[in-house]
Length: 479
Image (cartoon, rainbow, N blue to C red; front, side, top):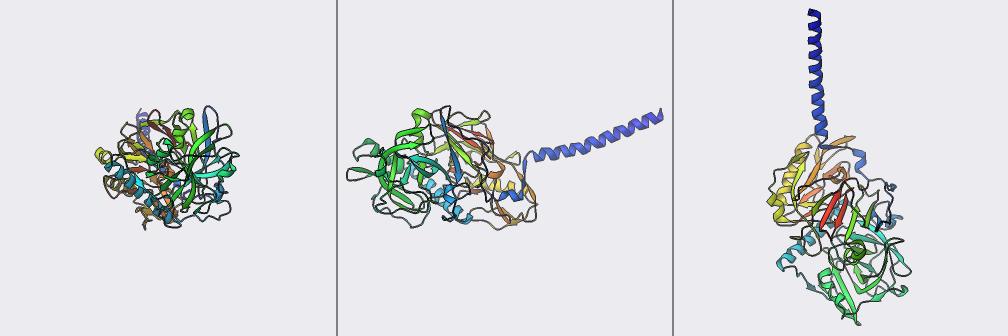
């Protein structure tokens, strides 16, 4: 009997010991639930293009285009390396120019009650030669004209007007990869007259009053870094896929263009103005579009017009309070780091307002929110050595002596109650293995709009439903 009791006692002690041990491991697993384990070698993109994991389709009242990074190995603009890719420091400097421009546009729009209009001389828009259009770094290829010409365009949710460079380039054309579009060779091209009401609509789409040349409407669009496009406003057939084409899409036919647009042929405007492609194709797609930005420049994503959202999408209403007439506004309420919601007053977000933007690279947070995010992130990353800042990114690490790293998860909370987790690839920005940075930055002013940038959108399916006034997020939209 004594032996039985002793053995039973030993079993209980052993069981208690095991429960204690595995309970500790359980907590470690729970902790890992709030962090990403990342192979350091995966922080830098491959030099070859990875095959897409999802097949693009054009059915069920939708049209899908392949999205590639402008300077990556999947881009047709980058096949022979004739267009030099900017350095990461240059990309971030370009990004800052775009952000300043957005903040200026929105603050001017607030001050003027939304009537932020300038008068320009369409033939003498000042520009700095060789400058760049912010950092819109994702492109799609569409067909324009009859017969159609394939053109690679930067797609941008922060712009409304679609434009491409056109022959005869009466004043100036920057270097682009594909043959410049010649409207005289398209049987479906038509100029818009100065007296047309649609010509007057350019004021809201570009922020500039249109000009007139030989009774033809002249558009002018200038970007934050002084890049610009000026030319004739017209219509032509836009072909998205073999089954989806539109006969009379309004677009700018640029005769005077300056800026280094990465060899692309122009820009596809996906903003909220009535001249954007989203609005012009609303009869077919009901102002519905979605995209997924790939995890790296060596992968591909998609841009889809129409269709339905993924079943696991989380939706939040679009806000128009601080977004102006073109941008897609969102209402943020908080941020989590490593599974813990940060102690940030909701007023920090509501005072600034927020937009989501496909062309801004790094998300810009209100100063108080960024300070809290940085402090929490640094604390959880304290075992890794800090290194020098990279441009606007001030929290950078040297991972040279590591094969894997553990990075805390980061989530965005919205006023609607949903939380969206940022993918692991959207948390860090790697210049090199010895300089990998937290991919967020703070605004300089508490009233500057919060911008949800494209690095943080990586691999999410972002679904815009303009008619219903909402945007959805689903993980794993692309790889």
